[in-house]
Amino acid sequence: MRGTLPVVASVVAGVIGVAAGTWPTLRAQAADEGPSMRTQLATVLADQRWAMPKAGSWTPPKAAPDGLPPVIRRITTQDKVVFLTIDDGYEYDPEFVNLVRKHRVPILTFLTSTYVKGQGQYFWALRNAGSRMENHTVNHLNMAIQTPEKQRQEICEASDTIAKQYGRRPQIFRPPFGSFNQTTRQMAKACGIKSILLWSAEFYNGTSGPGVGFNGFARGDGGTGFRPGDIVLMHYRKGLAQQFQMILTWIRQQGFRPAAVENYLPKSLGGNAPDQPASPGKAE
Image (cartoon, rainbow, N blue to C red):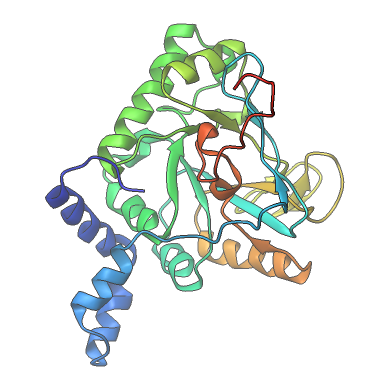
């Protein structure tokens, strides 16, 4: 998943990222004369690889007929999996990084790039724990009421910052508040975005949701509980580690497991799954 950053710069940034979220664990292990520091750093800095779904267990989302990034709200799958996505990035819970890394939980971060300033190391640690950094604009504005030029600026400049900081240009976009219009899709494509990922359920971690109270869970369709292929929205807030443990408990109690949503998206839409061959007689 690495991009085109110089090797030396990547390694240095990775080591700094470790210090933000994983160094306390490494230091404790070293005191116990466990694995060598070289071995520990190699493990922490290695890109995580999440399990791919079995062939035939899900239906890959399709490209939009108009050629613009399609809008995806859930994944059609028979697997009892849900996809945990976390937005914004203005709160930094270091224990959350250790939790994600220790328990190997797939997440996807939609980063508002203005929050990278002064906290770039924190998201490097999360990147190396397995979370890709995708686009959530520069300033978290309501896209649907912005001019085309402003929308393009918000999306393109966020991608530029994330690519420079983390070595990979975002290919998936989440508009703040879930608000977008046709212009948003056009500007997103112009900025290299391949799909727009919304959500089917929200965990109001660290806040109150309408009708569900503090730390409540709500489905967009008005139902209850998880359903296969749910894309769950969360936010980087104080106490995220404890809140994350809470939703992991709910997921397991209902017989589900977290999975990496990027592995259920074809490469043409910004994911890791192979693109499906065109049907005979149809144009690609």
